[in-house]
Image (cartoon, rainbow, N blue to C red):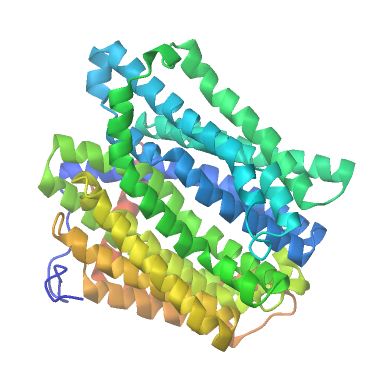
Length: 521
């Protein structure tokens, strides 16, 4: 890493102290993120109910195939979206649309119907494409399920724009409630179909399709009723402007999917169906942990820093992102320690003993995913300056590195090689992105604090490993609490920033409970 890439604060340097404007935006980020988080926690709770049911109902190979098909569909949906979900965020202008309703109707109609047309084209052509693939790439069973599930390409392409509409309107409560209802409905419908026709990969996707059709109808209805979407308001110049902005992000999103899912293809090729199922379970549990940070912050932060950039300028945006990054890194260390301490017992209880061995992969995968999530903050400058091509190239190189590392490490180390390849490629991509983004928005990274977070996470992982209780359920209840206690203790002693933030939060909570005014952080 170049020496001038980050602004380093040494031990005695003053802590980041956000201004009133930035403090207000941080409060808004916390409030909106909490709406997403509440929905997410509810969804994860549903997942913790459905996960052990599905892992027991389906064979290891079928569970791996369900995950494998999901990853393939994600890749195809990227082309259906054409990056327009990002254009919907970038080109939304609340003030202009309030003054000019016609502009609002052009915006909503163009974004929605443009993506719907692309998604429909891909949905119709995808089954034809998979049928001409060599059998070594797609056997008959895979071709059949991909053809059946291809309607999800259209549905998920359209959903991406509908969710973006809720985000730019900052309707975080509606977004959260709808997400939770969708998750619950999917589980219920899939289980009902399994009861009727038995557990199979096709049954799983039939239930998914039924629910997602309902999602699109429910989210489109208010837009139709208010007159915001109408095919007659489709604006070709705006559509092509959106495509021009979003097209490089197609490459970026594809590269992100290769980083996230390329190892599945190589595991299935080198090791077979059962190892793919083990890896899918480990990655799924690791993703649950990462999602607790990534989803609520990632959904809330982009509209906020875009608005802050337009209204307050460069300095306030840098201050906002730097402080947010510090808090994120602090929380990431705690999540890593909790996940590592709980991994063995989580696999036994949530997936069953037939997935034993997957727990060894979880700490490596969680570390890689948390490192990748840092890009939410680092990429802000590139997104604001519309340097989407630079983002795409960086992730593409990281994705290529992931494939090369899997090729080298899988034969040598088995599944742990795939997990290590994920960690190393995520780390390389994040460092490279930080170097590029620093030129646009030089965020402050306190290296001394980062070192304390790493030390605290390692200590918090190590201490619970020193004891075992009688049953996995007791381990799963006690070990994460022990890990969190150790982590907080280390930071309380070694990190002044943690003590400052904890004190500020405590004072705010006291004021709120007493009904007084909440002071700025």
